[in-house]
Image (cartoon, rainbow, N blue to C red):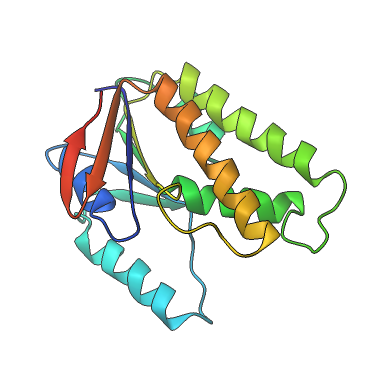
Amino acid sequence: MARVLIVGGIRSGKSRHAEGLLAGEPAVTYVATGGDDPTDDEWTARVAAHRARRPGHWTTVETLDVAPMLRTTRAGDAPLLLDCVNAWLAGAMREAGCWTDPPDDSAPKRLAYAVDDLVDAWSQSTARAVAVTNEVGLSLVPLTRAGRWFAEELGVLNARLAAAADEVWQVSVGIPHRLR
């Protein structure tokens, strides 16, 4: 296992499957891209549930700077568990100015640079890495322009990460299916 991508719907069991793939590892670096939001009780509870499920010997890093971690982690290092790509993309869109209405004119270019950087780092990485992401293409079409932009960007990003992955899994109703 080198690069593994796990896709699925919201609350489908993706993270649990990813954690299970790495359960026997003596050390894992858990890269949490969502971060805390003390104003959102539901999100805080979800983050707490994820933290409680992780083994105590895992190291957690909360960051959006995923590409540098992929570039500096090597095959013999502790594997990376990136949870999750969709939260990373939401953060990258925020940093690029995509969430303003209308978005900044240069936002698409800044976002494309960040996405290309992540895909390049994933494609070139020698790290053992497992990335978790939502499959939003099977859901309703978002009602807002920003929501549609996010869904389209995530669909393309997921396809690009899958193309460079050594294994791809889809988790549906708690059941993992290996696609490649």
